[in-house]
Amino acid sequence: MSHIPAVEGWFTMDEENPRLLGNRCSSCGTVFFPKAAFFCRNPSCDGASFEDVELSNRGRVWSYTTNHYAPPAPYVSPDPFEPYSVAAVELDEEKLVVLGQVEGDAERLHVGAEVELVLSTLFSDDDGDHIVWKWKVVS
Image 1 (cartoon, rainbow, N blue to C red):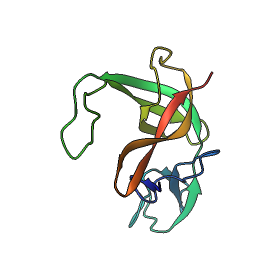
Image 2 (image 1 turned 45 degrees about the vertical axis):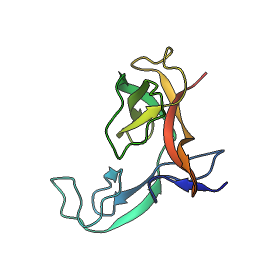
Image 3 (image 1 turned 60 degrees about the horizontal axis):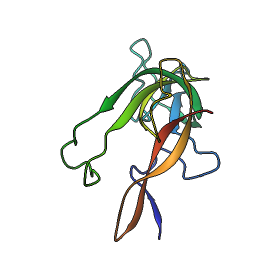
């Protein structure tokens, strides 16, 4: 079965060392995820050129919550629905906060917990496994 990124161009498909894909403004050095396209989103910069960068794959939980209700379409939920947690993670190097679903049991999840980026199947269909990034608490 093939592996398909659920969002093309937002992360690498390297299972051993997955990375989010962002970019950096060539003028001011501000890092963006998702990538900036036409202009720098830093209000004090008028830059319009960017270099692609792979972002940190570790960080610390800045905030989190657990979703106990099935989200509406187009999100594909398991049937029956299973609660899942979402964490806002501050990346180690960039200090950028990135949201992502949490892999596995969230009992060890707390503000300040160290997490790492992992790849996981969001859903499967006739085209293959649709892959997303998730955060996993570091053992």
